[in-house]
Length: 140
Image 1 (cartoon, rainbow, N blue to C red):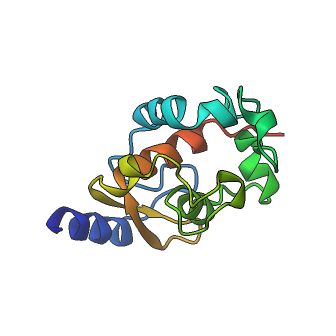
Image 2: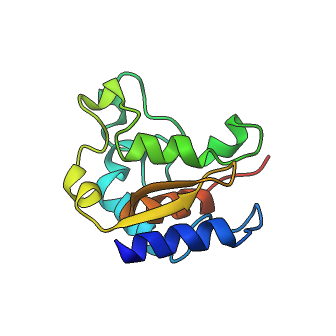
Image 3: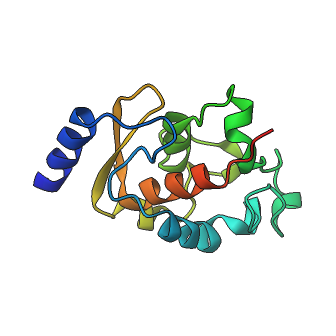
């Protein structure tokens, strides 16, 4: 709990550049490992929505490398966090996302800054996934 409070204080007191990671101690490499293990089956190893099970889903998984492009060049941190941690459920998953909830629910708490600069509480693995997803965004 003390670490979570310290993370929130650091996030609100430290201005971050728009291109920087929105969370301190975010580990995009670990986020990529989580993505490969828990998400790539549907979203594809390159996050382009072309995983081996993608054709079984309705609607089809989106290309996650284009999230920023679909939101006027701004990575939608809050929406991504809420989709991953289940606050914004997806019918196509058959239940709130993530299907592999234990990893995300039982991990230590963490905070990440939204695109508006406000902290949002979630778990460490979600913060790492968000950091990795930010890294794989394409520019056009």
